[in-house]
Image 1: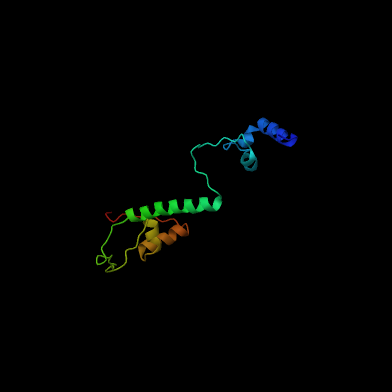
Image 2: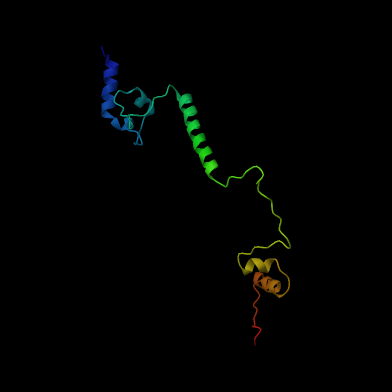
Length: 130
């Protein structure tokens, strides 16, 4: 026997199916849990007792996927074939993106030209072949 409150609740649910639609902005999770008219998008989805059980299973699945990725990446070495740390010989190589970066860290005429550029002093340049 249905009471009047459950009949009114079912009438309210039938008028607002938007609150039961998972893709709608007005989705109401509490109403969807207790409604008989809720449509599950994946009918064969497994049912879990609670969120803790779902989290433990989900973490186990993601841990297995991450472990497979780690195994696949990189070369597999035997214990006696470890990576060797190399050392650079000579001066360290300075990396400049362009000539302006090199001008900041040098001395001589290139540095003077950079200082003139910073102070906005006009300079006339002559090529060496004149």
